[in-house]
Amino acid sequence: MINTIAKLGAFNVWANETLLRRLDSSVAPGKEAPQAALRIFSHVINAQAIWIARLSGTQSP
Image (cartoon, rainbow, N blue to C red; front, side, top):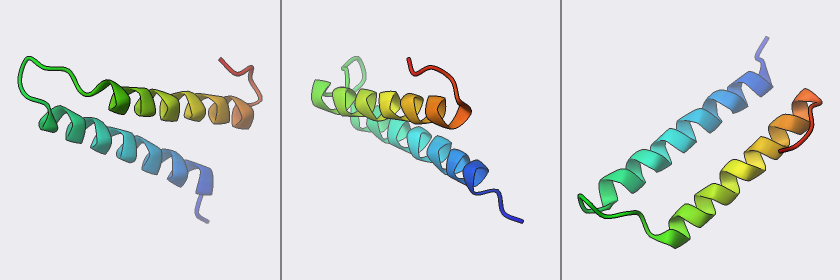
């Protein structure tokens, strides 16, 4: 039987790593990623933390 939550978790890790590698490769050496991109990624990570807390029955950060 397929564990949907585990598959979604694995996809989430893959997607986050892919996005971070893409951001890293698109920024010139010594420069930072655009603030707008970092703000959106921060929003995604925070939303993920909230959903993980809901799924695990713990308090949201």
